[in-house]
Image (cartoon, rainbow, N blue to C red; front, side, top):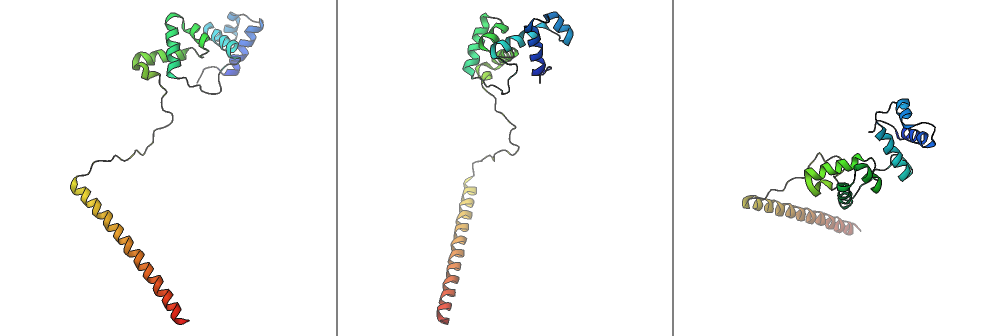
Length: 166
């Protein structure tokens, strides 16, 4: 979460762009630690028309590599302006991930909480265990057949008894 709200950033930028207040006066007035922050807010406002995005953008690993290649010969701020990636610290995070993990560090991470109940691991059965499992399956199927035949016999007996009464 950012230190300043998007509404506050927009107020500061608009005040600066209107020419009412200079950069140093804004820093004192709003107790902002760095003029670089205000400059970045201004750049974002001038390029995108707003400050702060409502949606979290997901960039492809190819795009990230393009940005990092451009970053080799340009400053981080210039790169952020050129590719409209704000805040510019995002580029620094990509660079750090690339240095540590390589290209795989640029791939999107899975979202959400991992499941608490993991999938059951299937262990190969020994021949004895497999034979036992097969016999249990066959026994279950035979019990089902017997139950169906008993139910059928009961229905037939019931029908023949009904016919005898009539």
